[in-house]
Amino acid sequence: MASYRGEELSHDISFPGESARYRSARNELLQAEIALRRQTEDVAAQRRALPPGGEILEDYEFEEWDAAASAVRSVRLSELFEDGKETLFLYSFMFIPGERGEPLEVGCPSCTSIIDAIDGEVPHLTQSMSFAAVAKAPIERFRALAAKRGWRNARLLSSAGTTYNGDYRAETPEGVQLPIATVFTRRDGRINHVWSSELLFAPTDPGQNPRHVDFLWPLWAMLDHTPAGRAADWYPALEYG
Image 1 (cartoon, rainbow, N blue to C red):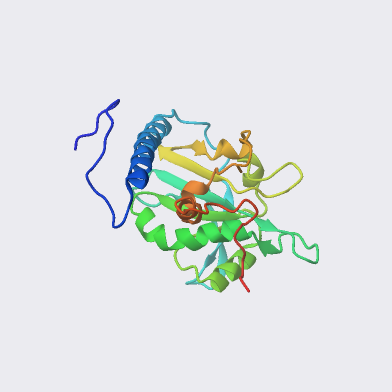
Image 2 (cartoon, rainbow, N blue to C red):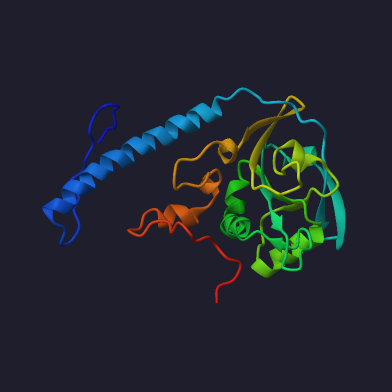
């Protein structure tokens, strides 16, 4: 059936054993889901229409592990754009203090859950854009976490020694790391910031967290489709006993 604005859409599908009460409620929900689908596309179109943001302040020099040379190498932000790709998507990965109070000791469980999911999608994502996860922790620590989690595809970078985190709001003035998704474009030799997950900084409705990177995180989308939904006091853990 064709989809038109203002038209109530439906279908003639039903499932075994459902009651008329269930079908009526489900059809009402279907209209809300259709409206949400339309709004999601409207917001995506508005996002795509953004004019270029600010040109990068500097060509940041990150560190990554060079497996071929078995050594750490430097790579600049401009070099992260793969050939033929104009878009670079960076996820700022947090490390948090460990039990001994040492800085940047433990990979954030939530960030880890995100990359657990994204790692398998990277070969698909990088057909049209470049992607990397950036942590302020030393690259050796980030690499050790990746080995423990079994990540194979995500490009991992360390921003230690740069001002990248502070400049692009992935760090508070006190040095606390923040999880931010950031998109850059390269056109005509210029690299511009295009979009960041600014919902992190916006006020939230009662009972909600910012949900600024939920689009990266299938865990919550799946839970949202179950009767129990999201547990208000539950978050992913690095290990489950």
